[in-house]
Length: 364
Image (cartoon, rainbow, N blue to C red; front, side):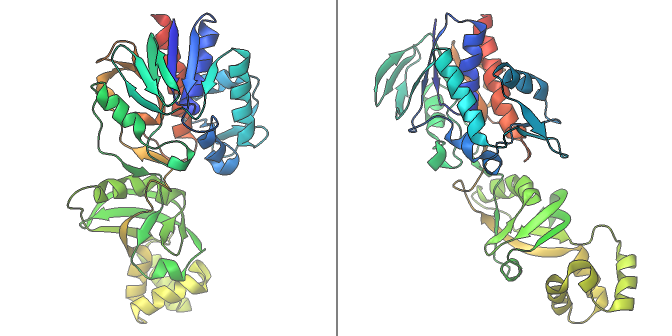
């Protein structure tokens, strides 16, 4: 049996290794359009590779898989799991070394041009044939690391449909003048996204002010709503609403201002000064602004800055990771319409989906 995997990223490498672990006689080839495997893995977790999270579904299966390869991990207080070396290169080296040991062929600089339903695969490096094909080509986020969206076109050519695609886990842009004035400042707050005045979702966390708008983990986690909105033909008016002092209610804050006349002791001089100027010296207005500070959101930084893609191949067209449309076709990782928040959850899904795809193939 020959299996060809398109994409040597997290899900593709995990799938290839698990296939050979399950059945050493399976012939496995990975076609990778970049010059080296695992380029996006190297960029994850700020170069440390946030492998998984203790709170992620199937985390134990993922960590057991890496233990079988000899990779030791460490976990931080937020449940984020990293390689013990704190180097993403360790993860890539472990995976590629195992591929060599198991005689998994990785063909780099190989762009897939087309796939027929009988699995004739035409590429820039010749034509290949397979009994099974796994699409692990990623999404559209950070094409310089390998995800250029070409996998979606291949899936469509095989009869699958794709949901609306937009950048996710990405920074937000704003036309408000204040983020630029506060560039480099961080604040722990409750942040909500409003569309046409309706609050869609809120989350507590750290917001980073930048010259273009907003960043930080809470921003990234809420960015999917913004991204989907601006992907529409007629997007709704969008605001980020920040409760800058979530630990105090309005009455407590009013009492504080009555006594001290400013918010310097809570927000620091720079942000406090902005709130005071907006309120024009009215402490009641200052309280309202501090608890309900609206910033105009104009969009996101786009796919080049996004960690993942929102949307993808429709899940109802699959039996877990096996196509219901084309026998012997599988898909795993970011190419599927399955997204999670920051903290190792998306990479955990990539590993797990690759592992489970291999299990499905070898169980037949």
